[in-house]
Length: 411
Image: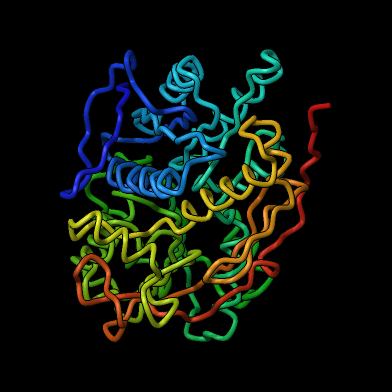
């Protein structure tokens, strides 16, 4: 595991190994714990750029109650064990907020460790900001006061897909392929439940769980999908597991609709190319063609990061920092407990519609969009000439689902 300090130059992200001694000007420390190497590095490095970008925007406006944000980054290789080592180092270095997203198994380990740390160290509490780990358990049976999720969970996204599938009678046979860990299993379970409720006429003709970020050749899996006669694939795959899956499908001339959680993630659209037009679908809180023009944040992000793969994909990270900034102003304090109390129930308007942090389970409610890859989109993805267009928008309030969370709050 390495610890990095990230500074932005005009040509992109310059990364330098951090020696903490003598660091000047950083007062509010946030620890970013995610994969910066290995098979999931493309997702980790891209989201890291988002975290630095939006932290710098707050700093340029004066910081959090006058304190500038410093981002400490740790490479966890999508390992819960590495993440717990990083968490201890981050707390020792004074981090007050832990940021993580890639891997629900990692998030489950972090949220338990943060809860134990805070119970044992009153006055030295930290918060856990989760921007992408979407196992429903994290805001249900495993919920706790210190954890806040800024992405819609598995069930919320599957419900959005269900609405999109209701009227598409061409969908008759579905194949489920997901990563073999808590998130992938949750996607498969949610698909079974959703199809039974909304499309009981649809047959699940195959189901597969594969190792997380270890498969280099998905052609054997694609061969099974073809042999099943499936016309539709539902997958929660992300990073390399997403782009390699759709690439293998393209190479094998697999003719299916792809209902994906992360089909617009880095590398996936270039991998599938025009074979994805009209067939590659995603459910997200944002895409570049939600509005007729690019948002100011998108234009600024593209100006700062000039590589063709640098897309403002994680709008939820934008929302996370907007919520943090608003909570700090509301609390008039950067104390983690006061920030947490200010976040509960917090409502903000955004260019895409209002959002609210649920007080009962700390799940952000924000608009969701089901979209399909098109060759007629105004703005493309990764300079491919292809972009996503909206099929359906689900307002924030309509994404809310019942929760089993029984929140225990500090006295």
